Image 1: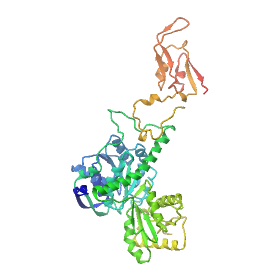
Image 2: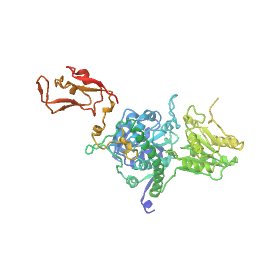
Image 3: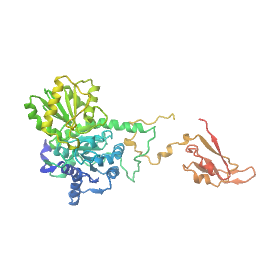
Image 4: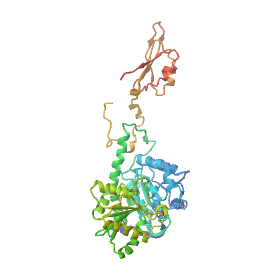
Length: 401
Length: 106
């Protein structure tokens, strides 16, 4: 606690995008390479401002695409720089092949993603289709639920990424627009240097150096490829522990921590709702009207999607009569089409837990999801639960016939 | 190959290679199905094979050689079968047709 008292904070009204930019500044990043894309743009604009006014000594690399943005970050990281980038939607898709290269080369890059729908049709609005498409890229994926958490998560992201047991890139996602462009009070460090006590700048990975030449990105024939990819499997396992450690140490150093799963009223409830991102705020707002309607609902939010936090999901499932899983993305062609619901069902099945999982697809292309929708979704699920009904297909909430 | 390859625990993360130039440890001779065999009695030491070999697996060896007719050469041209992948370019380009193209049964 002695440490805690030394930390000074400034409370500012910040959008999540700005909160992320403040965190990247406080992490004393060496380079930022990015291409503007809605709704991420203001992250990089703010960083550009910090560099221009001397608050951040970093190289801003202007690139012609997101593919180049991450490629430049990879080059910089391979030289030992603390690298940062930010993107969303089509930009994240354009850098998709490079996502695999960043993780395959085991470079601790951190990227923020203001999650947004994908074309076509063109939608600049929020959902999680872009972020969910990255789940097999071997990036650690954190999803924040508030601007403050996004700030804290970016600092934690470097702690996780640069841990020598992990050495994987980390993505910090949050709702496009609903979070990226809404302002909340955020406590940021009064003195940037304080962050570096938590994430000291120490190069823990192999770097390119003419004095000590190494080969990065060699070809691996069938004799070698499998083992090198298996290392990533192990790194992800290690990341699961390191994410928890990083959060706990953040709590000890700065007085805030989140755990892997955030829960409200999940003990002794009739059923529990599980989701990710900012929609959790809507659920909490709805808790009162749900209670008034005679249903005891609990709410839970995952802040880690990769590695998938199966232990926390199991613990939640063990105390739940049913799980209502809200997903803001669609896995086309699957009957249960919500990416989170699919992971949850897979974990429950392999551990022999057979409770109803009601998957609702909501908020696609930023279709409104209000407290009233939350009430209706929970009520409908509760009715199904009372009838002992299960579902074998996701419910596309609010789609017009 | 019978020698044990490194497992995932021993390999460097991300498959980085810390030893520059270690590709020489990677013998590529077992890629061949045909091998070039230089007939020293026909070889005029023009070194065209040495120029075209992409590997390079043509060695200029400091070893005297005399033709049956008494002509003597100060060096010999040999194929390094550890690395020769059997592409056949030397065979194709050899002006005096001094390189035979011999099928290898493995």
